[in-house]
Image (cartoon, rainbow, N blue to C red; front, side, top):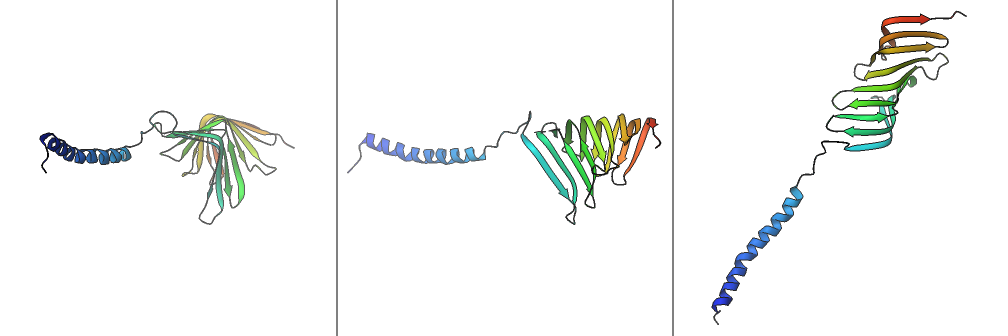
Length: 189
């Protein structure tokens, strides 16, 4: 049995089109899988509520905690913004420093955390001899173990008040350096 001309043409066309359709179907599936996800370049790529982190030393002792009401990460700016950040530092299982502010900025490329708006630093917060520092901005540098500000500061310890412009706190050695315009009021008992 011989095919007629039209049957032969249809058979040849089908034989030629089957590999083309198979190639198209197989490549369509792989190209969908290989398509990269769009990169977020503007805005927030992730956010968190009720953030809480803890850092421990090699012996398992608590070094510091960081908590915040919210955290929003901005990939283009390489930073995260925190609302109501609170930092607690510990030394030999003793709570040595509590820091809080209205907002903060943590940078991706450095260990710097900038605190702004109503910054309050409490030294020995659980002690009867606690002292408190208030300022408008403060930069924490974890690797160096220091905190800096060039803004005015007010330090109170019981009834004693000290004011200055600018300060460097070394929280590894528990020392502070007031930079300029230092004034103090001390009351004798």
